[in-house]
Structure formats: structure tokens, C-alpha cells
Image 1: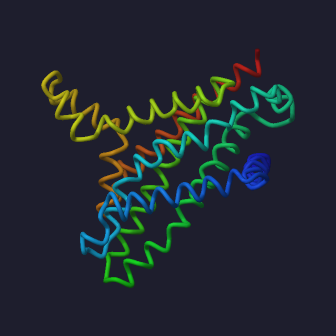
Image 2: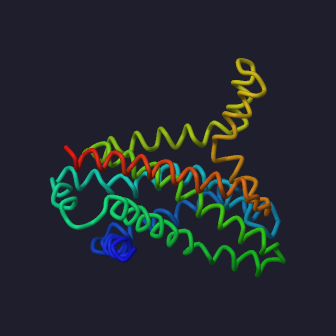
Length: 244
């Protein structure tokens, strides 16, 4: 556990060693604000809530999470430092989880910096802060799922651009599978059972349920299982590189 925390701390600190961290945070906050105020018509809706803020998070993470995770392992492979890294007395699981935690917490930091919006709705009205808190939790869990996917696909290639594109594609499929326009489109070709299975594998219905303020154990288990599955796959890929 000490090794895991050391890797996570060093990786997290590494984000702030270059201007990349500031650029990422600025872009994240700018896009979140643009989606909320211009696309989501926050002021025009006249409701003291953050529904227009959270409804765009799956699509925001669709690009921001891959942009953050694409360098986790691909950069190590490109520079040839992955061999040196894996010869250190660090278990593969600690290396994988450490890098993942650093990226997840950094994305969590970006999410936390949106707190002025929470303050704004409390100034404008009397929102249900319990629902908002649940929505932040759901958003953070969803971000972890996307980062876990990106971690695995980053480990599979030494090209960051390829890692980014493939991760965006996979995350899009994991997201769009539960979107109404997709389910309506494929409902003509699939049975109700198969349609429910496809929608159930998507992050959207689970996230949307939490955004309503309903924290169902099944939704939390879904996101935990999503992260666990992709991180396990990451360990298998990294271990195969170590063996090779």
C-alpha cells in the first residue's frame, strides 16, 4: 500500500511539473461553463438546480478523460522508460493503481473547482443540496470509469494519439448505448431483453439515476465494476509487456 501511494503521489505531482495541468483545468472549466450557461440555458431555465450542468458531464468526460489518460502508459512506452519502470521493486498492481488514482484524483480536482456553480444556485434560490452532492459523487465515479478505460488502452500502445482516439471511441460506445436516440434506433432490430442489456451496460442510465438524487447500490456497483474490469485488463497488458 505504501508503494501504491508513493506512485500515486509522484504521478499526481508530475501533472503540475509542466503547464499541462493548468491548461487542462482551464479547458475543463471553460467547457463545463459553456455547456451549462450557453448550451444548457442555465439562466433561461429559471430553476435553482444544476441539472443543466451535470447533464453534459458524460459528453464532457468523453474527451477530457481520454486526453488525461492517454499519456499514462503510452508515454512510458514511447520513451522506452517502461522497461526501467517495471524493473523497480514495484508490483504491477501498485503501478497500475497508482497511475490510475493520480489521474482520477486530478480529474476530481477539476470537478471540485466547479464549486462556484454550486454556490451560485444557492445564492439564486434554494436547491436540493443533497441531490447536487449525489450528482457530484456520480460524476466522480463516472470519471473514474472513463479514466480506467483510458489507462488500459494507453498501455496497449506507445502512440498517445492512437490511445486518445481509441479511448474516445470506446467511451462513446459505452455512453451512447444508453442514449435515447440510440435505443430508439436499435429497438427495431433487437428484443426488449437485448435492448435492456445494451442500455444497462451504458454509463448513462446509471449516471442519470444518481443525478436524480437516488444513490442505488446497483449503480455504484456498476461504476466500481467498470473500473475494476478495465484496471484488471490494464494489469494484464502491462504484465505482458514486463514479461516480454
